Length: 577
Image (cartoon, rainbow, N blue to C red):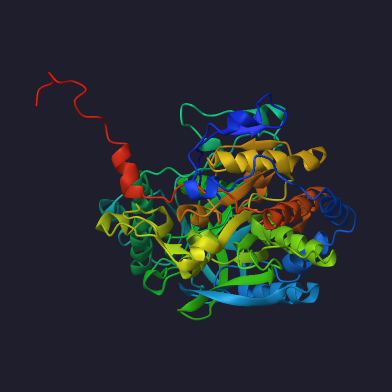
């Protein structure tokens, strides 16, 4: 998932930055920093074995086809997600992982599946636009027929007056007409040396937007989600006016995006926010054609079938967990973790978001088990549910095992998803918090690992620079002090546990596959995935073998941080009071 913008500093192996300079970064908790060695002791023989297994004997594309082709999209709470969870458990069992199982993170909301969606324009001529139901849309009553009416975005309840008594029996083209650039840029992008050097330089102006860090700005999110909440009122108005269905533009050139941004409200997966009218995304080209016709008073008629199925109002949210047990009596209770999110949206098969992260983690586990690695610490895999709706799976896992956060109860904050709400108190930690070492996440598509964001942790950056040396030839060159968001490493960081996301080559993740019908097996890069799984296995192995746990930043305390940011007093003693 990405809804993000960026935050901290970077050091590339290719850049002329000394290891000593890294130590001038963010503060690290004294209890952790005291135990850190000056240099890393790397098991180069085992690293070489991992490289050989991961690069020369990979099975990652088999995992990809089994999950993406065999099961397909995996919406949180759906029967398909449960099938994917059981499939993952079976793969972990077959490779010899310890205790693969599902673990609940609590009540999610409604189970839902798209069975099929079709749109046929019957007048003034025939056409069959690309279409997908929006997530958690109710079904039409079989195939329905209706005339099209275009309704621009309604800004407030006064806007309802214009459309009263005009919508009965109509299929609504809802929203402002999109614009299509007739001169598109190449959608395939690779991070070049200049981009990596950019990540390897500290943004002294604080701008980290291009590493997807979410703004810590409660009024900003209140404004965004107040508009999303108003869409629920729009949907109710359309239903009360007896409209047949709503069609919204989803994208152009064969790519249609489909997530809760296109639904009639963010919280449509909750029973008390259930969408009252069927809706679907259609290709921009079809939306614009029909929009032009009706704006010139040309009647447009459609046959429409949105076939969806609900499967329970209070489906339990689940993660998949499995271990390679630690063997060192003094360290085996400490946990090194890796993962990605198993859930996806429905328009494609969830191959790059985040099926790639899932199969990278599965393949890394397979590599370690095939080589009969006996780690000192326990290595654990977490395949998360509910990431796309609010990072629920990893947050629930953290809450159940390691610590919890407190959020604002202000009425205006309740329209905002919890993970974006204002934090109002210090972290409350549990006993296992002290035994958790580090988490590594993959959730930026199919591209190879080019480096890692160290989340402002300068001591971790010092360590990662040394870990990168034996894999520099694989393209892993950049250790960044920047933060990144917004996926499953974040809940670990929020409770003071080291959580890291890799810098991945973007390829066409942001331009084509992200939350779209093009998110399929064909968009995977086999060489990149082999490289990523190999590096993931090396990173978790290195962490599991260290004498010391990974260094930590101080425990977050949002109210104290807010106090620190207040303007100094007494700067202008003669200023009017």
